Amino acid sequence: MDEQTKKRLRHIRDATEVNKRHRQDLARNNIERHKRARVQIKSEVMENRNINYRKHMEWLG
Image 1 (cartoon, rainbow, N blue to C red):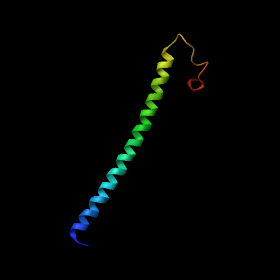
Image 2: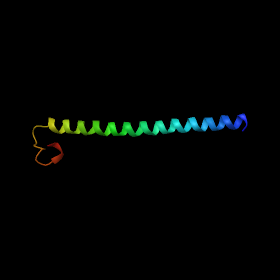
Image 3: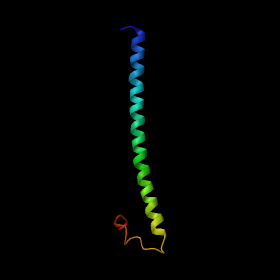
Image 4: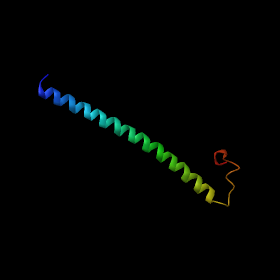
């Protein structure tokens, strides 16, 4: 195997690892963002004291 092929294969391997890590980061960030949004929704709903949302939404209780 010549030097150029070795370099190319090394680059492909490194790029594959970086892409895999990036995909994992995106998935983790998406999950964390979803959790934060859910907490935000709950807090906004609970702040509105004029309407009793607990009666209509079982996920709040």
